[in-house]
Length: 182
Length: 155
Length: 106
Image (cartoon, rainbow over all chains, first blue to last red; front, side, top):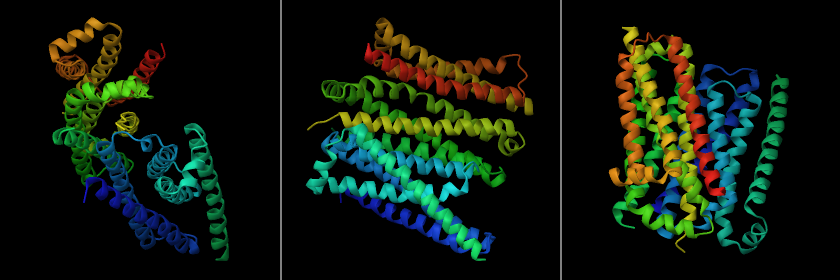
């Protein structure tokens, strides 16, 4: 198994685990918030999913760069390095890391933290899949080639921001209904 | 590229990333109250981070001096992206030099002040900013590395 | 004892500040004044290696002499000088990027 394959497989596995952990975190949070508060036992479970997300993110970053290093050595620089979709993915990963820092610093309003985390994980996963499929699906590659770097990057980021806002509205609405039911 | 140069490039990338990740961990712990357990963690992790940056410096330097200058740089300058070298590589190779010194200051503060750092909140806050800057500058180094590598198209 | 601790930290921060300022200065100077770049290349075999070695030397020297300075560092002084280092890291980064963008555009 080559260096590139090992990193690619580890990258995909971490993405699946991380996205799964982010989803589990939100589900557990809604289960725990039903009585209006989160007690110590519930907080412990949330810390576990949070740790899994964090470790997955670290492995994702390392293996992501491992893939780039493998491609660089095997093929030289390629169009992949300048893919606007991948650069949008890097931006979203930075947002995830910044979100974690701001949560730790207690500077991130909780109504945004969950939606930012959940949306970012799914968005990064989706963008990674799109980049992979662009190589295989001709019509997708043709469609994306109609836009230049800045256009495609901005379109992706605007869609991402809208997705974060929509998910935030949905999650906050669900939280109100769940707490109101008590 | 020889095996040694491939090893140097890959190690430079991973050790640099490791340094960034370790100082990211330092940053996350600094937001909590510092006790005996946490200061042990801060000391070890920041020292490992410093060693990672120094190792990345040496290995990256070897690749840069022996291979990049003669083989990769002319390729980039002839390509459609000469700015990848003239702006990003030039900036990266100099800004990177800040990191070991910034990291060393953080390591010394953790080792010398220890748990007392928790009583000196004013210094602790500026150390938080210092650690954030180390992470941010490290991330900038990593991203500029992608830009530079992308311009070195062999085919 | 606390005074000694503060003094070591103060010296190290002074050394780091000197190193950062030196790196920015020599980066700009060597690109604008090519004989300096050639001198670095001749003495250290590569200009970038020379910049690295000299910045380490400057850090060491300033640290060493900083220890003997008749300063009584306090918590407030450490906070201020560490803040200065933080600002120089930001400004140094912007200065280096700005300089190379300017050079590329000229």
